[in-house]
Length: 288
Image 1 (cartoon, rainbow, N blue to C red):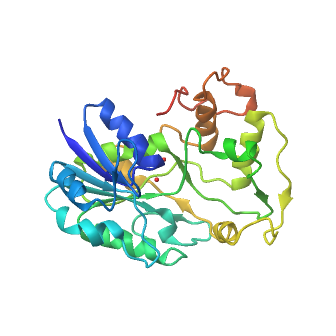
Image 2: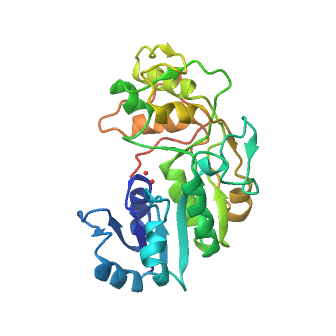
């Protein structure tokens, strides 16, 4: 029975864990503090024992406030001789002005200098580095933001970015277990504006969309304004060629419809509400 050790059992990594355990893998991992089914990151003796029995290691831990990668700093000496993976961000490419970017594009041009440095450090260790865009899935999507009054539409024509459903992240990692080391973009097929996603979520929920805000509206945090200042399209040709991967949820319409259908007691999908008729059959989903 193969074993995987995960640093950072968050939304995306937790979903991957459930997928692999269903396939017979032994999966252990850490959280910042000890929790059910997870070791505390700082419990070094226990972590090193668990690492010793792992065939593969994956980190979803971001750089710390100093810009250092905490996993490499503390446990880097225990990673050699096994498969290594790392969850990075497509934010390392910075603002491409809406152009398509693939893994050959320069990194470290945007706001995420520390993330780009960690990305490069993991590549130097021979990792499979998964560069991920906006992550969503059941319980963490535009549907919840609309219901909680946290969804925004911003008057920024031409602003768009890529997304990925957690199911497609898990499938990408599993496909890369037999793939060469290197960087892999994983994203859906249809980069779109945040406004379009929020409006689709409102249609599915039968709600009116939130008002259109100017980019400098005080309701938008500095982090949110920084997010809207970047626009890029993520190309996934390398993952398709080398991993045989393609997204099960190719656009936000199919992904949001599946998130809604995964809710307990959900009614059958309303195709008239705009779910993608060419998308996959929605099914319950077991996030980074």
